[in-house]
Image 1: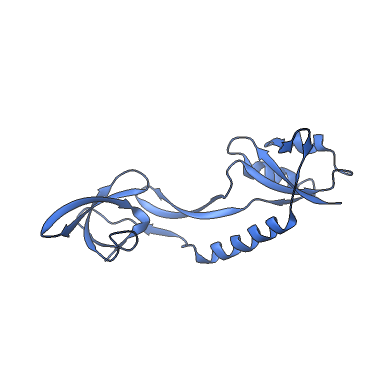
Image 2 (image 1 turned 180 degrees about the horizontal axis):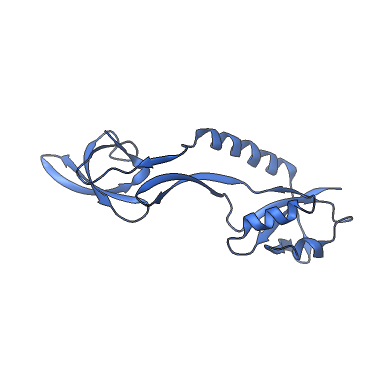
Amino acid sequence: MERWFLVQSKARDEFRAAQQLESQQLDVFLPMLAVERLRRGRRVAVSEPLFPGYLFVRFDPQFISLTSIQSTRGVARLVRFGSVPMPVPDRLINELKARGEAIARLQPEGEHELPRGGDKVRIVDGPFQALDAVFLESSGERRALVLVEMIGKTMQLEVDHASIERL
């Protein structure tokens, strides 16, 4: 009987493992998550594995050798309890697939130019939501420094890039 099993991939090799397992005519599920990353001064929506280093594969252990799964390029090992690979419930996979489709519909697509120093921005998320600010500079890959006027003083805040939008 075919069941879903959890496979651990080699470091950052989930895509290769999925491709190689699919080439063996196995059903593979690699849940993805769309996230925004900073690349060359632009926010870019990219897809990353929801569970880095892991993917799910569906097969019947009576007909498919566990050794053939484990010796597949990109695969480190089948996740086991003791010496027995434990099946993953079908309902969990179905729920992950349903949630993945809902998340994909909500995520932004494409590139977005980051504000430049001196640009007016609005904070759209977090405790300072709805405040207008002045963008100073990026502070790492995910953070930005902004100036906000509160209580008659100008204060410098560090916020997530996803929490600001250019006005």
